[in-house]
Image (cartoon, rainbow, N blue to C red; front, side, top):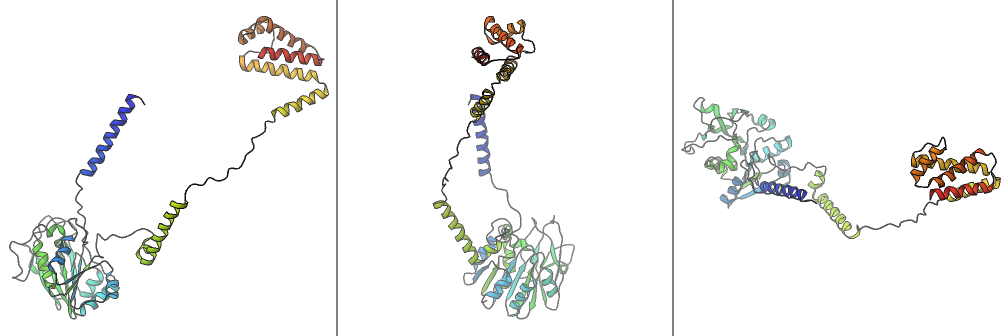
Length: 396
């Protein structure tokens, strides 16, 4: 490798190394997507709130629920006087989950939901309807409470990544308005964003500002609002935290999803994979198969030549052999020395002598002998032997 190529490779290596180091050390861009999972520490995850619930409620059980509400409520022995918390951008229950959840509330438990929309099944059944502005607000949203004892001063303010959502209508016979979004233009009743719906022996709590329960606003000095909203469920002995109906829930999209979601099938799959790896390590080494002996192709040219020679010798056809010998010799002259062989005269002899490096006398002797043989119609074995001898001496 020359010096120039080596320098180019060194420069390319330095550039590549610089890019790699830059990508490693540069700060990662902030992820502003909504997640609301208990483990996400991004601005709109719910890690802070979930950890605060556990630390502030040491005498209460805070249980993380990673399953569908229907599966959890069907297969779990629930404790009395508990609360099921749902926090997400949109909370959409299927019919079976709603039926289990409404039964859970009627038995004297509570459900706290914070979201911009609560799904058609839940809203139709409880006669509630939300109205959302589908563009990020350019002005600060100021939520507060109807109860004077809960009102904060100064009032909390929310703006970044927040959608203005209020309750457009609700059943006033069993619904209590708890909070609203403060506005100078509209009345309080037109901006209700926090309600309690009585159902049987329990209650539903609906809040249309899920962003208030995210990491970003829990650490921005507005955590007091989330705390006062959750104070309505303080009498619960057990808190169930939904970690299934979340924007940031990790979902397996591969064709193996069913297998990996079943414990027995998942471990069977893992055992098969481990067994294959062990097999490859211990018995997958390369084994050379037996190479069959291949006989080389026989050179039949010599046998063919001998056969043809014997054929001509048996027929004593010396003239034919002499003609072919002369024809082959002239073809070699044309191919190797690019000379015309139509006329074998003195001029041809001089050119051939120059091309081959033979003397004029040697060349003349051969060409004149060829011309003599070509002029005769009958030839003998002696003529053939003499011609062969002269051609071999000339071509060596």
